[in-house]
Amino acid sequence: MQRIKSGDTVMVIAGRDNGEQGKVVEVLNKDNRVVVEGINLRKRHKKAQQVGGRQIPAQIVEFSAPLDLSNVMLICPSCSKTTRIGYRFKQDGSKVRFCKKCNADID
Picture 1: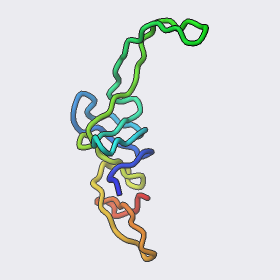
Picture 2: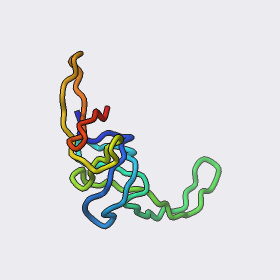
Picture 3: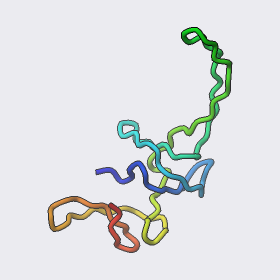
């Protein structure tokens, strides 16, 4: 079970965007990285292309680049504070994440 999942709200705790908040769009498990909406914006210059019978002009595309997982911290939905994550098992045997500050279930 991952510490941070897509759809979670996180805060950047290190780097250029320190203190910014955003929603996780994608988690890259193999690279140990996350893509956060509106954070770590980069620009890529695209050449003009000929696709099919039409011409696509040259453009500058802005996108959110991945951040390292250690540089973000989850914001608890119940207490609205940045928190560490713990794991526990429910009565039915399912594993659930919980907030270490307010002890509330996150999932």
